[in-house]
Image 1 (spheres, helix red, strand yellow):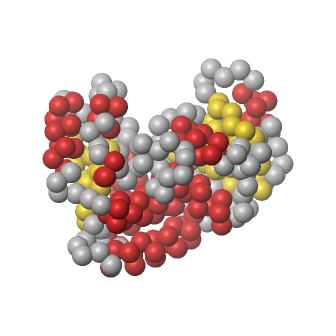
Image 2 (tube, helix red, strand yellow):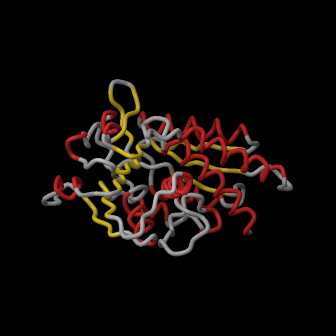
Amino acid sequence: MIIDGRKIATEIMADVAVLVTELPAPPRLTVFTCAPNFETKKFLTLKQKRATEVGILVTVVEFPPAVELSEIQSAIVSAHATSDGIIVQLPFPPQIPIQHVLDKISPTHDVDALFYAGIGEEILPPVVGAIDAIAQRHQIVFTDKLVVVVGYGRLVGAPAKLYAESKGANVKVIQRDTTDANDIIKSADILILGAGVPGLITPNMVKDGVVVFDAGTSEEGGMLVGDAAPDVASKAALLTPVPGGIGPVTIAVLLRNLILLIKKS
């Protein structure tokens, strides 16, 4: 089954739109970016469009590539007074120590749930929230399943591992230096992909009936593509495509997080 993430996102956004009307003022979201790449620009455009559709005000601040760390930190601190939520849209240039940037975001404004620890949080990191929404709608059970997370980045792999463990799964993480990676992937009941390598996973690498959450996006030939080759769908019980799978749901969850933060304040 190929998942229609746009449909799920539309359902979540309908709830967000209602919540926005119940607030005394339009929610305000500030997004910081620096030298955005192809994937980042596409994602930012979608975020702005979806936010505007439900009455959320979005300000995008784009820093030049040579920006100093102190300038970024100062801008983030100042944004707390004029925003209800703050996003640092990764990646940033490698010379910026990103943890020093993210540490300036208060938990009261953290729509990306950077402080997620995998235990009982109402506000989930957007990719994890998207996986959770899809899993709930399709009765995907994690308990006692082998979940293989491919890639261990800040936005996908790390929080996905915590989430799957919180659901009772046996979790293994695949990184560049993992030995026997192919054997581990072949044994997975559930694959969560976040490597950002086009077509990394092919049908011969997975077992029949695997569930594939593809959150790995990259550019190939001017198009967004995922870590899973499209024909992996022939082996999978469930596959989230790129584009149109986890991506739209991630944006909807992020905007829902903004509303939840406002209601908690």
